[in-house]
Image 1: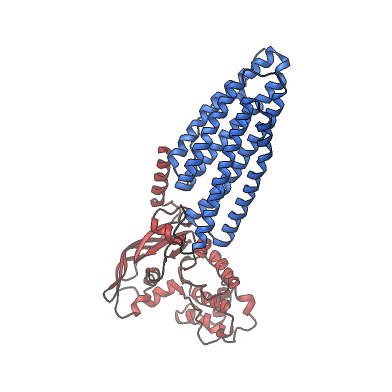
Image 2: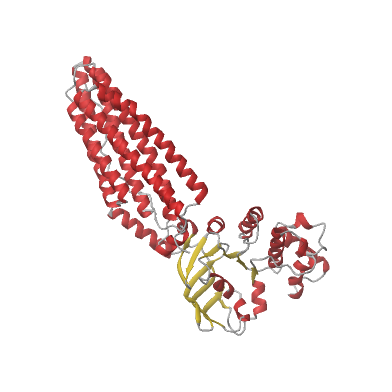
Length: 235
Length: 273
C-alpha cells in the first residue's frame, strides 16, 4: 500500500503501522479462537491462557496510538496516507475491544465449567465460529485493501444478529423452565452478547476498509437482525 | 459494494455542480499561455468564487504563477508571452481593448513573494495608489484611507507612531503586511498572492494567514503557494496544476483527504516532485 514516497522513512513508518495492525489482528483472531475452543471443550487451562494473553493486544494498541500520533505530528499526512493512519487508529481500538470481549468469554467459561452444561452452549459455539470467520475475512480484506470483501463481511453481520436473537430466546426459555439454570444461562447469554459485539466490531472494521479505499464513510443502513432488545417472553 | 461505488460517483458529480452560494468572480476558460514557443498553460478552465480563498498548488514550473499573473495582466510586460482564452471578471473581458490594465490592476491587486515596499515612508507606500487613482479628495481623506488599510492589514497598531519612517525599515512580516495594506488601499475586488509567506518565519506566516481569513469577508483571494499545509489551512477551494494542465479542482477538504486524480494524490502525499 504505502510506497514510493520521496522521503523513504515515511514509507517505513507507515509500513510499521500496517505491521502492528496485522499483528494485533492475528492476536485477536487467536484470542477469539482460544476463547471459543475453551468454551466448547470446557477447558479451564485454555481459558486461563486467553485471559492472560489479552495484555499483549492492549500493549500493541498503545504502540499503534504512539506511531499514529507521531506520524500525524511529524509528517502532516494527506489524502490516502491520512486515511491509512486514521484507519489504523480506528481499527486498533476495535481490535482491542475484540480482545477484551474474547477475554470476557474466557473468564465466563471458567465460571461455566463449575456448573451443569446448558444445552444452548452448542448454538453459542456456532455463533462463535461465525464471528471467527467474520474476523478472519475482515482482516484479510483490511490487509488486501479489498472493499468488496469487506462489504461481504458487513452483510454477514445480520446472520450473526439473527442467531444471537434466537439464542437469547432459547436461554430465556430455559431459565423460565428451570430457575436453577439461571446462573449458567446468564453467563452463556453474556458470552453470546460478547460474540455478537465482536461481529459489530468486525463490521466496523469492514467500514474502515471502505474508508481506506474510497475515502468515504459508509452511510447506508445495514439490515439489523438483532431484535433481542425488544424481545419479551410471556410466562 | 455497489452501494459504495454509487456513493463515490455521487460525490464526484457533486464536485462538478457548484452550490448556489458560489458566485463566480472570475470565469476563465480555454486559457493557453506561451512563452515564445514553449506552452506554459494548456486549456485551463477555472472559476474563482467570490469571497473565497482559492489556492493554486503544484510543482515548480507547473504554470500556477503564470495563471495567477494572467488574472491582472502582469504577463503583458513579458515581451514574448502570448495569452489566449477568455478571462471574465464579473463578465468583463479583462483582455479587451477597452480594459485599461492600470485600472484592472487596481481592481485586481497583487502581493508578491518577497515583500517589496517602495523605498519611501510607510504612509507614502499606502497612500501612493489611492493618490494616483484619485480616490481621495483631500489630505484628511487620504489619511483615513491609509489608517483603515493599515488596520485591515493588521499593521496599524505596530506602526501608527512611525508612519513617516521608511517602509523598508520594518521586519519581513511587517513589510509583507504593508504590501497587503498597499494592495487594499485602492479598494480592489480581488487580491492575488504569489507565495506571500515563503520569505517569512512561522509566526509572521500565521499572522498573514489569519489576515487572509479576515480579508476573505470583503475580497476574493487567489493564492499560489508551495506549502500544501498553507493551502489546506487558508483556502476553501484548491486547484492542482501539473505540466501546464489544471489537473483537478475542488473543495480544499476534498482535495486533501480524497483527491480524484492519481497525480493529485501523488503530489500532495509527497510521491513526486
